[in-house]
Length: 84
Image (cartoon, rainbow, N blue to C red):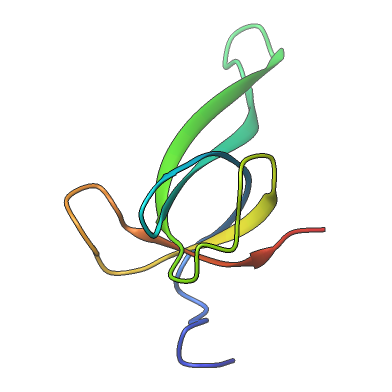
């Protein structure tokens, strides 16, 4: 593992929904959650702002993001690459 990819940091897979900011992309991450009473699965979606230094990822790209120390007020993730 490299210095950037520490095993304690979370890695999530999502889709870029906005690339209009400078060096920042908005990544939408969906996951399935099970209802405690009815045992039915439903989709929960959350958006994260992630740092993209080279501005190489654009809307529609599937990416991997990794948790890191805060870069700005709302940015706590960095894009580490494309997802399969």
